Each structure stands twice: as C-alpha cells, then as structure tokens.
Image (cartoon, rainbow, N blue to C red; front, top):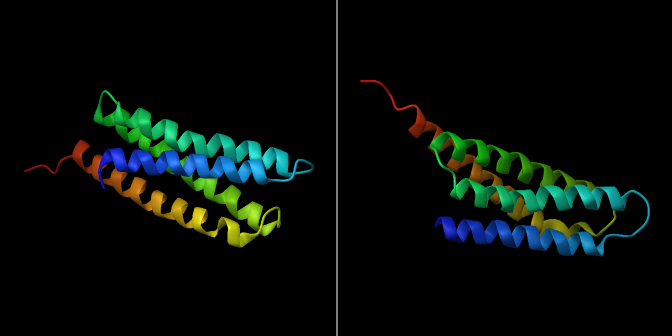
Length: 122
C-alpha cells in the first residue's frame, strides 16, 4: 500500500466516523462520546498527514505513535457505542474492522521506521 493510499484510508475512516457521530442520539452520554470520537478519528488523519511531512525520522515516529494511540482510542469509542446500544453493533462492525486493520498497518510502519533509526552495529 502506498502512502497516498494509506492517507486516503485514514481520511475515509475519519469521514465514516463523522457519519456515525451524526447518527448518534442527541441526548445523554452520546454527546460527549461523539465529541471524543470526533477528536480521535480526525486526529488519525491529521497526524498521519503530519507524519508524511515530517522533517526527520524521529518526528515521523513520534507522529505515527500519535496515530496508533488515536486509532486505538477511536476503536474504543466505537466499542462503547456498540456495547451501550447507542447504535446497532452491525452498523459499526465494518468500521471497527477498519480501525483494527489501520492499527496494525500504522503499528508496523512505526516498528519499521524505528528499526531504521537504530541500525544494527557491525
């Protein structure tokens, strides 16, 4: 997968989360949960864009670390939305699956980049 394709997936994830947030009930606990999901899901996209423009490998790794944290948090909010029956779990299953896939991709990218920072000594 190219960096452009991965950025497109991060953007699509954020947009799909926004649609979920818009479908949440207006009252009660849904509002703060929706706000938190908004922050974390859009942060995935924003920080991946920032990572691609990093000035150093160290900055790239730091931004990817934020992306990994934010995608994990987004998935957690999606789980809470499903478990609390704010929306049907079936509506969220593909989005939760995408969150898991993106988590694995970003974590692997971070691991690869971290290996480049500390090459083995000879």
